[in-house]
Image (cartoon, rainbow, N blue to C red; front, top):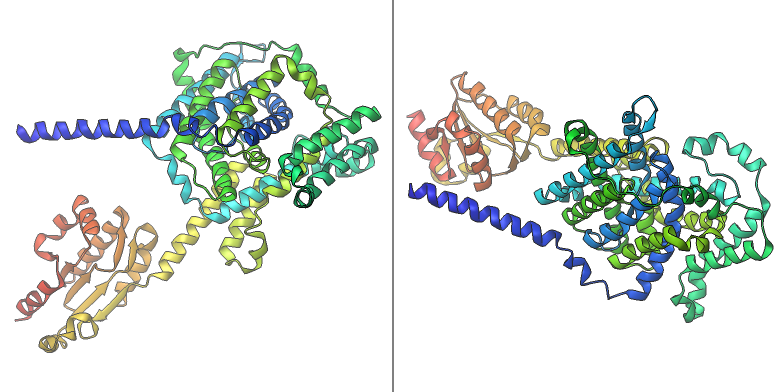
Length: 575
């Protein structure tokens, strides 16, 4: 009874400790105490990113089929709530292309009766529920495993996003309506060239030149270092368009439809349809983790810092719950906005919060200040952002990369551009995984040698045992499902023997597949009347073997902790 009570108390204490560590991880104070450290830089970065995010929010709102205002509300929720609770100091959240497309797919299913109108309550209930799921996942502390994403996958993703940004801004750069897909950019490239609006180039080219020349100018004129290049490009491009009265597209053209819609609505989640919403909500949550944490890894690579994956997942959960309540598009940490934030001088979550507040102000009355900005000017800024996203760490060494790394990089890059981010990441991770399995199976060569060539025979007193039919089998490295076949082949090449000593001292890791494969190998040897002894497993390996009943199935008399105890057993067996 005392043991049961002690065990219960230990379990309760462990649970309380787990909850405390989880609450510490998601405490917003971690972010709040940094907000004063870069105020001017964060405010300027936040305002600039907010202005850049506006047309993207409007566009993603339309893509999601929830409306342009929903896109802005999603960006507001992602910026303020995601910034306050998130785990990436420079991350900026909002609607993203993959998530907008995913919610649009769900909207094809959730419609009201025969009207074919989207069921908004269903949509925002799913978004809210996905946020709850993300909060639960963050408490389980499993989000951190995103750090195991192979670097060629991350680099391919970064370069793919950069190429997408550059290509999708071509039309806006020359004063035309942007294409909705990359395929559309290539299909209509000829028509784009034929219909270039020369007046748009009066804005786009000077803006782009400012962005490229600003860094050299900062070195000569120190005062310029206090002014972000994108802000100067916005002022210059807008001034040119205003004073020349150019007939080109402006951001205000896209905001017209948004202003006609109902700006504020509040949606109560419909939990009576929980079974119906759970599948889509899980899918949204899964995409949010991948989309957000890959963006955080990109930020880590650029800032040489390390984000908190669990806290970032919690932040996205809170942001999506808020978006669901306010009628906003589902959010995730956005790579392009995060990279832009870094480039514009953002260093703390204040930049993300200011980005959200900027969009809030635009939505409620200051839109006229942004409406006069030409889309060609924004295209120039985004064009430069796309160039900066490219991974210049890997590009110079592409020719020197191992073939498998190069293949993973190229596949992720092209699939990201031409197909879908999620498919690209999945393919890249699968290719990288198979490469890992191949490396493990070729790097670690399992050894099967006669007793006379083993370490056991080094002692002069054991020379008399050298002629005995004893084989030493030494598995090497990790024993898991990917190294089972080499293990079997290595033992098949062993010299004939009547006793087998399995020396586990070189095994670094073992899983269920590895343990069962080794057990089958030993049972197979015993059917041939071969005496088997397993010895010298490391404590962590032995613990796994005990948990899966390996030692129990083998027989305790067949497992020896130390090599020193093996010699008497050999002598007894052959005497």
